[in-house]
Image (cartoon, rainbow, N blue to C red):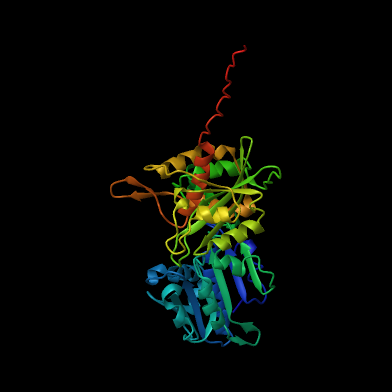
Length: 436
């Protein structure tokens, strides 16, 4: 056939140039990354077919209950945009295959059908779209299935996603890889030469009305603030005022560890701990620690390794810190004291304690400075911590008890303890003595 011109965002051209094992793009809405990868999957199938190579293009997503949840329609639209591709492929209601019978598309959900990928026929290309929730175990299963190779080609993995968590498997496996055969780029709305006017109106509307979500939705930033979260506006304001950055500990001031107690069982609640200093009117939030199912010895080891030993740090516990563990018959209070720490147990605030912690935190947020590198996981928890709602009756049911609540409870404990009034010193009583 004669040479053809394929329209792609300019930033994607190096991604598809030359040999590779992995090609990826991550970014926000309206970037054209999904449509571009769908088109290039069809182009790659055409190239294989023209070279006499037979096999399948597998399009996967983590969650796919039916073809309606797959990339089928995206691939159809991409092929229909290019008349020469439309001449090559036979497009049906539920299938895409080449008219010469060499290439066919398969659509799979990794959460349900991941084992079946290993038994499929010759896989020439696996494209995983919306890949952010794909687990590391899933990657370890699907990647070895891409073992086909021939003269001048090999089976490839293509990945597209909108970033959500820095710790997700897709981020750690592919983003910023130093391997020259792993090629990728960040792609956002401004990189799309055909960015629609309607999406531009939606983008500007989100910028104005939903600033806490704008960066994640449109700029490909990690998800940091949940809409409706208790501290969403406070975290955004702290970022705006550069109060989340590099924060030094004052070497002359005592550190304080505020703890929400977990347990030692496999299904125990998380143990969460904030390390802070009260320096004048500033609250310096220096570090955050969280663990599940670990013994106290593990927590103590972390404290010592992070310059929070008994000589430099005081411990603050919730009221149940004085309660004895059912298994080990020892309280956290006594265990910390035995380890050499000064311990304060914050009294039970009774009904409304959760609300009191939230309101105390909101009042104190303007005085807080966060050391970004070491408190990232904790700030993520605060950004997610939100109200549980009954949508049918449109009422709030109090804080949602999920992965974020333990870090938020420890944070609230710190704020309540900071605001607790201290009793003024008793005046010295002088006795008048009569002189004889």
